[in-house]
Length: 454
Image (cartoon, rainbow, N blue to C red; front, side, top):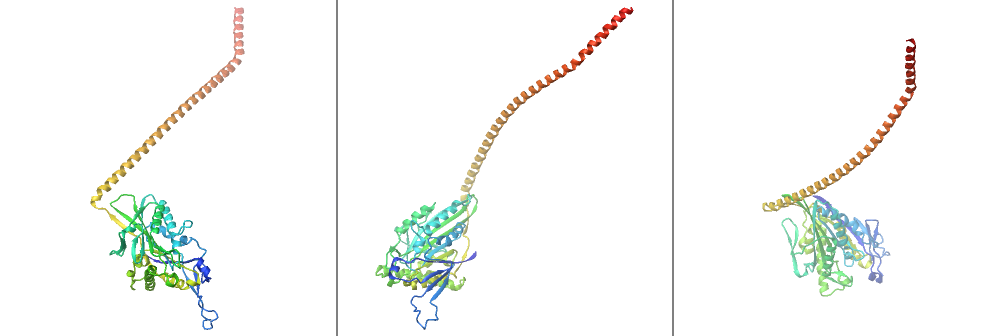
């Protein structure tokens, strides 16, 4: 188990059309890669009493993005968490900020510029495809929303309201939630798109596409070895992607009736989240101070992400307009406090010991594996024997061809030697003929002399 500090990033969205028509001034600016400067538009620079007081306040985050940033937020904040999820670690990404600040744009994106949801799932399945062949991976997902402090299953809206349960080990469970196994990112994208159509959204004066609920997309990656054994180690990594509804002011949204009640519930859950952030940041990583996670369904679900076993990234969003100064200031204060939160991260390992009744199936699987390997070895031996026979025939043909060629060469050499021997014999006989003639003449002369003497 190791201590991990919560990463906080800030994104300043561009001015929208309504703010530009109102003539709103820019009060939020990014300075460098990590600093954000917020200017108070209500202070009069000509006021003598406040002349020596600074109208600017600086906030420092792990990283900052201004209005020019597109979906590069994903690369800097979320992409590094994918490897940990595959290895069995939990990770959480959630967007925080007032309504209309661009949270849903960053999380969901558009068709042309997909957001964190789609980019994370694409890279997750690419990493799983590139993983070792000795491991088996299964991926499942669930998608829910918290609307008016009740939990609804977006993949199966007819299931009604769901309850949150916590086991003795402190793990949070949603009773009756639908979990769908998937094999590629496209399936999850289709399911999340289907779920988004069931999400509660209504236009307000502050945001034409205002999200009236908090949504949580949970992706679970289970890793286990392909080798059969009596006991095996299973790693379970969970990825939570949370798109929060934005805090609202009735004067800005001009909501009445049902929409006003929705805004009250949204503000209540976000207030509980802010209280948890305050408590967690002040305790300094120890459990001495009580943190009331049960004050709302949202904080109860995020208990493991904020103060438990998870690598967590908060992406805070603000508007640069002077008309949203108070909301921006509150968001920046809470985001700065969240930097002090530390979580205890550990790998989720589960040792599975099979019951004795399951040994039969394990032995059967092992026997099948042995037979399969034997068949593979036999096929390899047949292939080797066929290759060796082909090589033998080829060598025999080469030997016969080489023998015939060598016989022809020997015959030619033999003929050359015989011819050379004959020439040598003829050369030896040619100088001996005169000598033989002389001998014969000498013999005849001697014979005639003897005759004369007699």
